[in-house]
Amino acid sequence: MTGSRPLVVVGDALLDVDLVGTASRLTPDAPVPVVEDVETRERPGGAALAAVIAAAQTSRPVVLIAPMDDDDGADRLRALLAGRVRLVEIPATGGTAVKQRVRVGDHSVVRIDSGAPTATLGALPDEARSVLRDAAAVLVADYGRGTTASPQVREALADAGGPIVWDPHPRGADPVPSTRLVTPNGAEAARVAPVDAAGDGLAAVGARAEALIRHWGVGAVSVTLGSRGALLSYGEGAPMVVPAVPVTGGDPCGAGDSFAAAAALLLADGAVTGEAVAGAVAAASAFVGRGGAAAWDATRRDAPAPNVIAEPGVDSVIARVRAAGGTVVATGGCFDLIHPGHVATLRAARGLGDCLVVCINSDDSVRRLKGPSRPLVTAADRARVLEALEFVDAVVVFEEDTPAEVLDRLRPDVWAKGGDYAGADLPEAAVLRTWGGQAVVLPYLDGHSTTALVERSRT
Image (cartoon, rainbow, N blue to C red; front, side, top):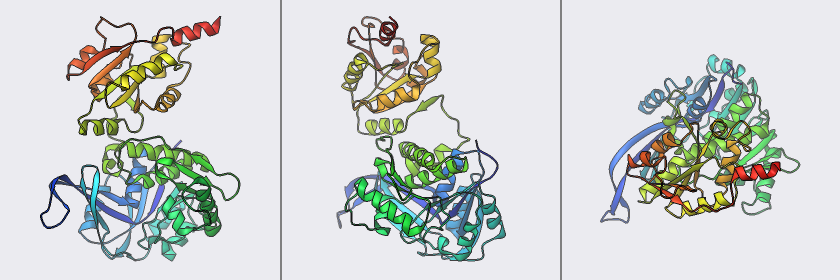
C-alpha cells in the first residue's frame, strides 16, 4: 500500500535527445548513412528519467534532488519534469549534460554528448535535507557527474528516513554504507570488482556480487543481466537468480533506471529485498517491451488505459513484424489446463504468419463462460505457460466475454480458431473484415478438451 511519504531520487539529471530519421543511402565522401526526415524527441535522462518512471508507477509523491545549471538545456529539462515530479534543485555550474542519439528506425547511428564531465555544486538546500529525512525510500541514480561524491549530499543520505537503492556509475562514488541494495549491471560489476572467475556466467557474476558487498559494506547487490534477468547476493549463501520475461524488440535504453525505480518503490511499500528485485525484473521487462526510454511519456498514470492487460512486448512484436511486411496472426480461448489439442492448434496458427499473439479470457470472463468452478488455472499462470511455448510470441488477457475489443486494438491480419467451426462463419469474422483481416479455422486434434479432462477427473 502506498502512502504520503515520498520516494526521493537523488542524482544527475540529464537531457536526452533522439534525432530519429530514415536512411537509404551513404554519403559520397565517407561510408556513413545520410539521415533524412529527422524528428527531434526530447525526454528526461539520468536521475530525471528514473524519477519520471517511478512517478508513472505509483501514487506516492516522487521528489527529484538534482544539480541544475541556469542554461537552455536546464530550462528544457524543467519543462519536461513539470507536473510529473517535484524538483528540488542543487545550484550547479558546468552546463546541463545533453546526450543526443541519431537513430534510424530502432538503431542508433551515433551519440553526441555535451556538457562538462562533472558539475560544480553549490550548497545543498535545507529542503533537500528535509525530504530525505521524510523519505519512504531513496533512489540514488549516479551518472558520474560528481553529485554522489559531494560530502554534503552523502551526509544527507546518511540521515535518510527510508531504505536506499543505489544505481552506480563507473565514474561515480562508492555507495554510502547504509545502502540496502546496489544495482550495477554486469559490465559495471566486472569493472569495479574483478575476480578470478572469468566470463559472465552465474558463478563469475555471483563472485563479483559478493566482492562488491565486501568492498562497499552494503546490504545486498543485485547485478542486472539484461535479457537474462538479475542475480541477487547478500554476500553469503546461494544467490537468488530472477529470470527476465522474454521481450522481442524494444529499446533497452533506460531499463536500468526502470529496474532501480521499481526496486525502490517496492522497498518503500515494505517489500523485502528479494521481492523488490523480482518485481524490478518484471518492471524492467515491461518497460523495454513498451518501447523503453523512447516511450517514457506513454506510461503516465493519467493516460487512459485500454481495457486489456497485455504482457510485455505485444506492441513491439506487432510493430516489428509489420515494419518488415510480415503477417500478424492471433488466436484466442480460455486455455485452461493446456493440453495437446491446444498445442497443435497454436503450432498450426504460428505457421500461418510471422508472429502469434494469443488472446486469453480473464478469470472473471472464464467464470461467466464456463461456470463458477472455472478456471482451474489463473490467467497469470495460463499466460506464463503459453509464453513458454516457442511458437507463441505474446499473450494478451482480455476481460470481455468475446475478444472483439482486443482484436480491434491489435488488428491482426489472421484470426485462427481450432474446433468444429468449418463451414460456419466465426463470431469474430465480422470484426476482422472491418480492417481487411481474415478469420480461418484450423483442424482440431480430436479427443482433447479441458472440459472432458475435468469430467474424467471427477469419475
